[in-house]
Each structure stands twice: as C-alpha cells, then as structure tokens.
Length: 406
Ligand code: NAD
Ligand code: LMR
Image 1 (cartoon, rainbow, N blue to C red):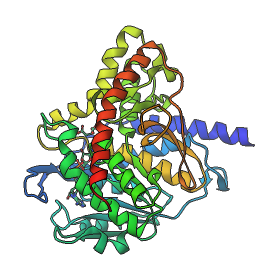
Image 2 (image 1 turned 180 degrees about the vertical axis):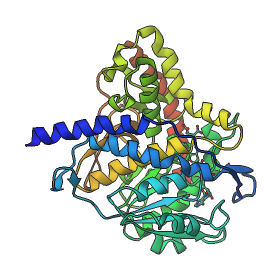
Image 3 (image 1 turned 120 degrees about the horizontal axis):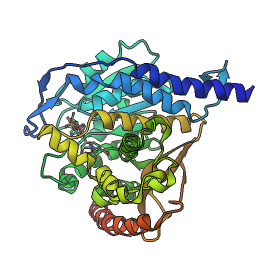
Image 4 (image 1 turned 180 degrees about the horizontal axis):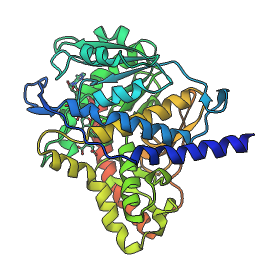
C-alpha cells in the first residue's frame, strides 16, 4: 500500500509542474510609490510583488510532496498543523508575496502581518486583502509608528507564534554590498528580535534581512545573553539553493524539481558555496564549467539588484525561497522532520561558530545541523576561501552583540 501511495504521489509530483508549464502567462502590473521610514526609498514595485506568488505556491507544494508527511485521512491528506506565523516587514517587496505564500500553507492557522505605519501599504490593508482567500487562515495586520517600541506594542501580534519570518529592512542599491546595510538593518532586526524574546521566545525566528552573515550571529548571541536558545535564530539562505538548482537545470536540461544542490557557507559573495558534486545531475557538469557556474550563483543577488536599477533587490524569488524555508520549519514542528540548508549557530566546521549547511527542522525547531559532507578538490579550496571571508563577517555580528543587549 505504501509503495502504491509513494508511486501515485511521485506521479502527481511529476505531472503537476508540467501542467502548470503548459500555457504561457503574462502578468502586467503597475508601479506604486513607496514611503520609507527615513523617506529615502524612492519607488518600489507593489502590485507585481504579489503577482507571481500563486504560481510559486503551486511549485512549492510540488517540492513539499517530495518530503513524506504523516497521513491522517486518506492517501494524500497530511495531518494539518494550526500554527501562528508572523511576517515582519509584511508590507514590503518580499513581505507581501511571502505573506501570501504562508497564508496558503495548510499548516498555518493564523498569520500576523506586521510593518510600520509609514510602510508602502498599511499592513492592515495587506491583511484585509489576504483575509479573503478561501483558506482556514485568520489574517491580522499590525502597524507600529516609528516612535513606538516594538516590544511594547507587538504583544497580540507575536503571542503564540511558532514562526516569525523577518524580511523587515533596507534592500541594496546598485554599487552597495550587503555589508553596507548592517548598521541600519541590525537595529531593525534587534527591535524585532527583542519583541520575539518577550512575546514568543520559543518561536523559530527566520532572518531574511541582510547582511545575513552578520545579522544572524548578532541576534543569536543576543538571544544567548538573554538566556534564550540561540538556535531559534535561523538565517535564510534558501534562495542560494533555489538559484543553484535553477542554473544547473538550465545547463543540464534536467527539471529543477529533480535537482538539489546544497549551498553551504554564508550568504554574500564568496561565502556562498554551492556543492555541485553532491547533486547527481550537477555532478555531471564538466569541471571546466564549474567556476563560472559557481560565480553565477554567487553573483545572482547582485544581478537582480542591477536589473532592478535602484528599485530594490530580489523579492519574488526571495518570497518563494522564504516560504520554502518557512514551510520546512512548520512541517518539522508538525512532526515531519524536514531538511533545508540554513545559516545557524554551528559546530560542523572548526572555527566557524555560524555556518550554513543542511539543517533538519523537527518538533522543536532546529533538530540537527549536518556536516558538509564529501567535497571534491575544487570545493575544498572554495571552502577555505568561503570560511576566511565569513569569519570576518561573523565577527561584525559578534562585536555588535557585545556592545548591546535585549
Ligand atoms: P522592502 O523595502 O521592499 O521591504 C522592507 C519592509 O520592511 C518595508 O515594508 C518596511 O516598511 C519594513 N520595515 C522597515 N523597518 C521596519 C521595522 N523597524 N519594523 C518593521 N518593518 C520594518 O525590502 P525587501 O526587498 O522586502 O527586502 C527586505 C530585506 O531582505 C533587505 O534587507 C534585503 O537585503 C533582504 N533580502 C535578503 C535575501 C536573502 O536571501 N536572505 C534576499 C532578498 C532580500
Ligand atoms: C539576494 O541574494 O538576492 C539578496 O541577498 C539581496 C541582495 O542584496 O542581493
């Protein structure tokens, strides 16, 4: 019976994306003016930020089916969870489509959309919009003025949350590095993390905000100082895996759904280290093509920043990737251990207190941080390069945490 079920499930998983791809769709949307907390974020794509997300939801659902869920009723129905999730920065370029994708997750019973009162769209408006989806999820919006302290006003928003996704923060402009965002974004993250520490200390806090390499160590160390579990703080690097799978698919002609390239290290420049040798399709790519492919993955974020020409960085692909990570966390909490690459407190590599490798999410959040596994000669050299760069970026976070507390 189990074999039949697996076969049907695999057939379904293979057929669904083909059906989805069988017709071409063009989405046309307008640009809406955006207001930033400091008044300097010029324009931002609004409507089109959410437009691609429904298709992304279907593809995510397909990928999810490949991890086995416990069965409750009938062949295909997994036991649904009823978790409360918050998206901080939920009115932003990533926040809106990410909120949509999380609202569609059958494991989500309640969704808080949190942003500033000066955000491009009031979070209450995003919530009102999402609350009409024909799903069980109850969606509420929460807005905070610049004068208020998050810890004082986010009680209802965060209470009972199991997962807090954080795309709140400034995106890059062409010419900037992710490091250039540390000063402003670390303080935004700290405000959110401080509120989580008070109102939902057991929630997994998934930080999307850049620079991930420094912000995550900073926030995890602040949690540790406060006596909380630093492994509740998780850096979202899933977009690097998504990109690596896509680019390998383009070269090999294999469906990216069947490709799983682990990307280890961190999330900036040379710290982004795809391990092509560990995927059976990527491993067949000629050695001579690997350095260029590696750089393509490393530079993909910058390519999007340049293509958006000062109007932001990756939002839709990031929402897809953030939802993939969010769904993995919820699946784990709901009793289906699920593995994704993530940047967490780690001891899998000597001298690297924070590192991205495969992480299994279980009933308590991070359950197992996996070693990097077998590397080839090229990858061993790359690992040393990645570690040297990442060490400096971790130190920035550790220094921040030394000087402050929650
Ligand atoms: P955006 O400007 O479109 O949205 C950010 C949102 O955060 C805005 O709605 C803003 O009002 C809100 N915000 C700002 N300060 C806040 C605060 N103190 N509390 C609550 N909300 C606040 O930006 P975006 O394109 O969505 O990018 C967000 C962040 O994600 C950036 O730092 C970007 O670099 C990062 N990012 C990370 C990855 C990754 O792979 N980890 C990928 C893409 C983008
Ligand atoms: C990305 O990789 O797309 C993000 O980190 C955003 C950026 O600034 O590149």
